Amino acid sequence: MNNSNLAKFLLILFVLMALTVNTGFKNNVTKIEEVHGIQVLNSTATLNTKETFTSKVVIDSGKTFERSNAIIRYEASESPVFEVYGTLKLINCTVILSNPVDFIYISGGDVYLKNVTITNLFEGTAGSLFQADSGSRLYIDGFEAHNFIGADLWGTNNLYLSNLNISITDFIHIADSNNVTLINSAINFLYQPEPDGSVSQTRLIELSSVKDVKIISNTINIPVEALEFYSALLEALCLNIAENVIVKNNRIVNGGKIIVTYDARNILIANNTLLAEKLVEGSELQIDQDSENITIINNTISMFWEGIEIYSHSKIIVKNNTVYDCDTAIKIEPINWNDVADIVVEGNKFINSNVLVFYTIGVTLKNNSFENLARANG
Amino acid sequence: MDSKNITLKMCTLKNSTVYLEEYTENITIIDNTIYVETGSEWLKMEENVKNVVVDNNTIIGMEVSSGETVEQETPSTGEETESEESTGIEETQDHEGKELPFFVKMVSTAVIVAITLSLIGLKIKKRP
Image (cartoon, rainbow over the protein chains, first blue to last red):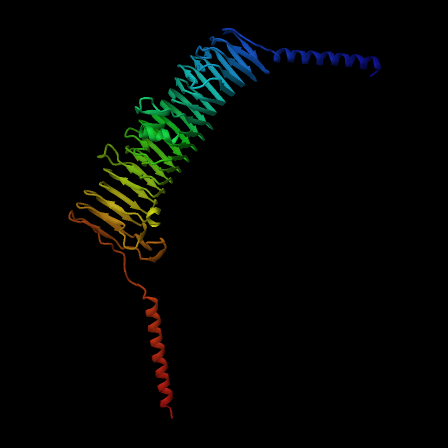
């Protein structure tokens, strides 16, 4: 190659590089300093954007609002921040709220959140994190928010909640939904005593009319003060009319009903640590009389009034659990006590706890260890 | 328990009491290993308990203070109660082979040795 050709080649190469760099910057350096009351059409920003919204963001059906690496400041007092009929995608974003508002309402839309943090600039409790109507879709992987009321999700199939770190004052309610996953998350209950001192049933996580659910490797924390106040009326994890549910490798602390099933079937409760920090009357893991095909296996359960209470007689397996320091380790008392109970209690360790079998026909307790250390130690 | 057709099988009980309440019936307690403090009962029954089978359980005694195992008894051979008037159950484990206290052993051994030596001494004296 002679000098002339080499110079031409270098010139062409330089022009191509310049075009590539320019195009890239055109896509990435979109800065929106302030936006007033918008209805979003299609909007994308991908690098270090800062935006301020002074009214809610409405994303219409068929439209997409997408932000990556963005700081979104919401200064309005109008709820919610995002009203989604189309698609909302937030990736590596921080949302700063100036007022206690709801975060996202979804109606038939799609929401995708990855590594999103919410910062509250106000005192007290914000609104709801998520509200969803039938046909909505919600996928979250990495989400941190504190001092919110909770979430209320209806008819949200393929719901995926991963790596949440949230603190809520009320509850997470998931209903009429299939294929639900809650994984690797920390969910903390913020106890606020009722001003009038009244006590009513309270649930932290409730799944109603759900099918194909996985609740895996989560930490669910309730302060002991809440357990003392609500006692057995405080349900940490409620499976109500639930089918095909796996509850595995979770740590759940201080539920009055640490896990409770109502009319649930095909439930696996395995490898969980379930504990209370205070022995409170009525606290327990409870299987109600309408539930069936429930397997409780390899769990560690401690400091409950009744570690495991079974009112059902249908296909219940309690196997290889360690239950200690409960008033009663296991209580078997099927409501339909004329039927032969299909209940297997095998390979468990019951330590410093009673075992009660009432009005039951046909239970076998096999290979269990019953040990009263307190008595042995005087 | 107040229940019917309950089986307690191949379990280990330490300082625990199986308590059969009134009107409990058809209870099988077999093949268990039961550690029990000296002087404590591991099985209690109220009145009107029917058809209790207690068989082949291994009962192991434990000292009250330390919980140390000091004595192992042979497995029970089986017992069945069928009377409504039953208020308890005879434990059927064997009580043979109780060891003598150590000082008794020592004294008896010393006596035997003394007598033997005396007899040998007499025999030696009788020789011309």
